[in-house]
Image (cartoon, rainbow, N blue to C red; front, side):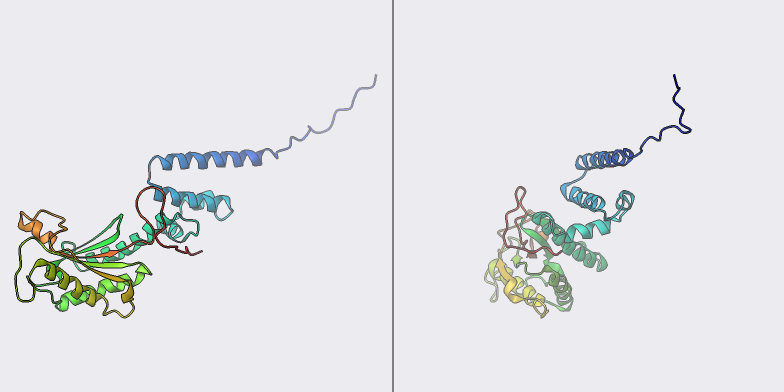
Length: 259
C-alpha cells in the first residue's frame, strides 16, 4: 500500500472570520456605551452621542476620533442636523441665544439686574426696572438705551420667532397725572423698552407684541421690598417655533432645518 505523501506545509487556516468578529465587537462596544449614556445623561446629550455614532458607522470618522471630538463640535452638529427632533433643535437654538445674553450680562456686570431663563413658553429675559427706569418713571436714560441696543443685537438671531415685551409692577398703587394706575405705568415701560429695541432697523416690528400686566403677575412676594423689587420688571419673551412642553412635539409653525 502506498503511503500518502505528507504536504510540505500545514494547511493555511482562512482568517476571513476576523473581520465580522471585529465588527461584532465594535457593535457591542457601541451598544454598551449607548446603554451607559442613556442611563446617565439627558435626552439632548444622548442625541448628540447618537449622531456621533451615525458618523462612525457611515464611514465619517473612526471610533477613537468620534470619542475625542470636542463638545462644541458635537453641539454644532446637533444644532444643524437635518434629522434632529424639532423640540430638541428648538431648545438648542434658544439655548444659543441664552448663552449670548449671559455673555452680555457677565461682561457688563448685570447679573443682579438681568436674568435669562428657558421654560415652556420660550426664552425669557427678565430685566429689573432699576436697570432701565427711575422710580415711578417710564423714560429710558442713556444707560437703559444702551441695554436695549445690546439686547436688540442679540434678538437679531431670533429669526422669525415672535417676541413679546411685557411690563410688570409691584402692588404699591401709583396715582399721577401720567399714570393713574399700575396698568398705565407697566404699559408705558414696556412700550419705552420695545421702542428702544426697535431702534435697531434689523428687527421686524411685525414680530413684536406689547403686553401690560400691572401688579397681577408677580414672581415674588409683595410683602417685602426685595420681593417688590423683583416684581418691578420688563420681560422679553422669545416664543419658540414649536411646542416645548414634554411629550410629542406639537408644531406651532413649520420650520426647515438646515442641512
